[in-house]
Each structure stands twice: as structure tokens, then as C-alpha cells.
Image (cartoon, rainbow, N blue to C red):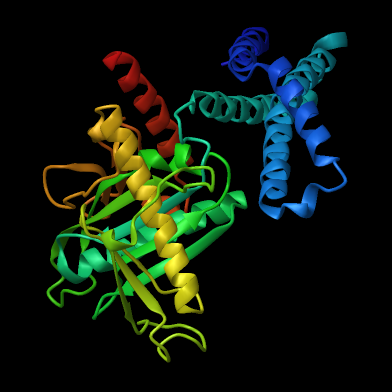
Length: 371
């Protein structure tokens, strides 16, 4: 079936019109000019924290602006390519190139459109992801480690920096729990839709009778707080335990009591950190994550929307949001959005953009329906 380039390009331009309206390029350009003026002040770095925020905000604003402007240019180039391929009787090779570019531009515009949907209070923050094994014994612990690798591979595919903050290894195989940070703008907005219970169905590699096993893991995603966020925790509300790090590690691991377990007494929230080199560093990292969780809880309570909190996930039957089936057939399906793929291998290797995009669109639709 021949591609209707005229209609496709018209649709792309219509989508970009909406993107520009949401992005508000003129306001964004004014903000960039203002930040550039602040960044050019001679004594900028006299206050390193303020300087870091200004330069980070400037880089983020420029990236957002250039992304929209460059996309408009790509659509113009695509239109010119189609014109070249259709003049003087047509050029088949040029039209094949145009079809390839059309597919690439549609994908990029779709991703840009999804980005503009991320308008929640914390969507533009970095994210802290915690994975916990649930029902299913050693298979669940192995599944938790598979999910950990999936998200780290997703970040690697996009060039996103990650930092593993805590790992608690299970006795036989896999992980009891793990926490890591994805430190790029909009990491929380993208990954928040991954929060919930994940279910794995497969022939267990740990069952010598080769039986099929169902196991569960819980994924929690919270926004990373910034220094401008005001969450003060009185010392008498925090209990701190120190212990020796467990599992594989470098020179500092397993040699000193550097790992930290921090408990917020009023809420019972517990945060463990062990992957930094010193107890002081682990304590600081644990406090930051605890503050992030309390901030999210505070905002949710103020807005009477506790269902939007990360919260505790049961990681068992009845509340799963995605199924990964490896036997008797191959399929990964999100039970909220109905998005699915028959290639679990690619998914576990980090190919989850389709699930994230579908999740964001579903989340926006749910919010609109509730308004």
C-alpha cells in the first residue's frame, strides 16, 4: 500500500503544533536568555550549589528548546526529500529513503509528544527506583535481578547515567531488593508508570522437575528531591543502624560497618544504603531517599491522592500490572494499557520504550477521566 506522504506530513505538523503550544517556545526562549545572563556573572561559582542549579537548568532548557526546533526542521527536510523523489517521473531510491525517514520522524515526534504530556509536579525530576522480590521464593529473587538488569539496560541504551545505591542479595540466587538512581531530567515522569507488581511465568531453572513457576516482584519509583525541597526530619524521628555490607563488592565492602539502615519512626519507612564507600556517604544517600519518599507522601496527603504514591506493593496475585510469560508461550503484556510484545528477550534487554509511552498515555487518560 502506497504511503500518503502528504497526509502523513500534515499529521506530523499538526502534532508539532500541539507540542509547540504546550512547550511555549517564546517563554522558554526568554527563560534561556535569563539563565544565560545569570550564568555569565563573574562570581557565579562563589556559590557552587546555586551555580550548579543555574547551569543545569540552562542545559535542560536549551535541550528542550532545540528538540522542538530541530524536529520542525526534520519535517521540512522530509517534505523536501519527498518532492525530490516525485519530480520528473519519480525516483524509487529516494522514495525508499523517504519512507525510512518518515518512520524515524514519526517515532521521534511521538516521543516528543509524550514528553509534553509529562506535566506533573515531579515529572521532570530524576528518579529513584527500588525493586523487591515478592511471592515465588528463589524464582522471585531471580526475577527481581532480571528487572534490575532490564531497567539498567534501558538507561544504558539511552545514555542515561545510573547509580546503584543498595543491593541486598538473596541466599540462593538473585536479589531480595535493590535501589538505583536514574539521574536525568524527566526520569521520574517516564519511569513512574513502571511502578507496581510485575509477574513472571516460566519453567523454573531452580526446579529439578522442570515445573512452571509463577513469581512476583514489586517496583517502586519516587522522584529524587532537590535542595530547594523543604523536608526537615527531626533527629528523634530517625533510627539509624549500621552493619557490614553484603554481597560482591570492592575493597571497602565486607570490611567495615559502612552500610546504613535508616528508619523513619512515625511512618515506619525504611531505607538501606550500602554501595557508597563510607558510612557517612551511605547515611547521606539514605537520608536523601527517605526525604524523597516523605515528600511524595506529604504531597499526596495534601492533595488527597494517596493512590498516586509509590507506597507498598504486595507483589502477589491480584494486583499485578504487567505479565512476563516465557512458557507455554512468549509474551509480555501490560494489563493496564493492553500494550504487548511477543519478544520477552528484547524486553529484558531494556527494550521497554513502548511500554513506557503507552503507560504515560494511559496515565494521562486516567487523570483526564477523573477530572
